[in-house]
Image (cartoon, rainbow over all chains, first blue to last red; front, side, top):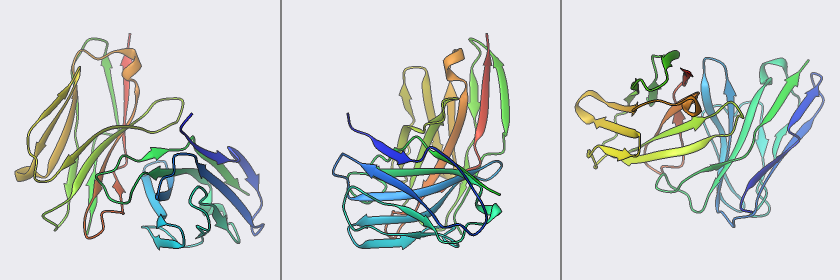
Length: 114
Length: 115
């Protein structure tokens, strides 16, 4: 089944403890992206990647890192999480870069930083 | 600056009523794409429609229709004869040039359809 998977789905952590949220897609998509969803703010793009080893900042990249070493994986790294990074995170992918492509979203990861 | 405004935070309608969700966008670019996504209570995001800024034709898909008006920078979404399964949060989004790889979402409209 074609899908975007995220792990973990739920995570509670403490301030400053490094964490990684994984994102994987099995559709051979070139474009992948991370978003965070917060009440009253909608979805905001954190980082995106147009292909392996090609990443760029979205609207709210501060406090996050990403890497794209393999086409199928696009992990989101929080080196030193803070409570303001408590959010619902979505990974998405599309076959190619560009808005003419349909983005497929993962199920979301709910993160709580204490 | 790129911005998408969904002024309606929450809407409640009774089943079978028609409902329109508003979306107003801001961009200085002449070429861009607009989108609508649905987020049902289960949480996933489902793509509904994409519209190129050069294509101002309205679109109808079953009970769903979209009205794109460049003159008012609006891309409104109408559900005809609403059903309980339409209850969800709906997001409008904008993707401008140059690369079209960035996406700007509105804050969403939560629609509740009451049986």
